[in-house]
Structure formats: C-alpha cells, structure tokens
Length: 161
Image (cartoon, rainbow, N blue to C red; front, side):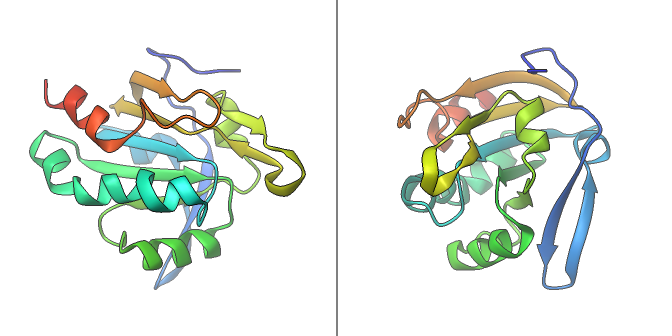
C-alpha cells in the first residue's frame, strides 16, 4: 500500500531513543491534532542526510514553529541507538524527533522503500511530507540521488503560504 496526499497516517509503532531510554511511538497518536513535517532519509550518518537534509531543518526549526508547524520528525531505516547517536552528533535533540524504522514497515506503507544495493540494502527514499491532524497534505519524494524538493527551505515556503 502506498499513501498519497489525502491519506491518513496508519496506526503503526516506531521506536525512538532518548537519554531516558527506548520508547515506542504510536504513529496515530503522534500525528493526531498536530501539524508535522516528516522527513524520510536513506540513513543516519550518510553524506547528504548529515551535511544537508537534517541540518537544514535544524537551522530553520524556529521558522517552522513560527509558521505553525508543531513538530519536525525524521525517520530512517536505522535502529533507535543509531538515530540517537546521530541526533546527538547533529545537535538535533529537542528540535527534531528522530524515529527508527528498522524493519521499514512505516517507510513501506508510505511507498518509500527502495533497494539501494549491497551496501545500504533496503532503505527509505529521501522525501518530505506535511501531515495535518494525521492526514498527508503534501508529499515530496526525491528522484534517486536528487536533493531538490524535500529540503527545509522548500518545505518552509510551502507551510509559510
């Protein structure tokens, strides 16, 4: 199943890790009654994700909040321990909610899974979604190896209008 604009975020469980430990997040509850930017990345610590994608959202965090965004979330096909280490390395703690989709169930429902070969395996395609009260209102999926439509500046221009 692939979700599109107008689809409701399904009820799934994804994990996160904070200094307090591991936590299971119910996606239906997380997205309910809030406007959320969800970015999907191929992997923590990968070049474009670490140098451009996540840093852009960290840099524009306050502008997103001023534009009415309640939260920014990032999901990757990594485990929760890796996502926490990456959040700490990137300075994202307290700004971006980082979620592990280690079995790529959420990424698969979104229609984002792609086989990136023998090194990375099955990952999520780079993308960004705007979700309002659990409904996908905007969906920007990058072409392979591109970084043109899911960047923070592009999404900020959408939510600011």
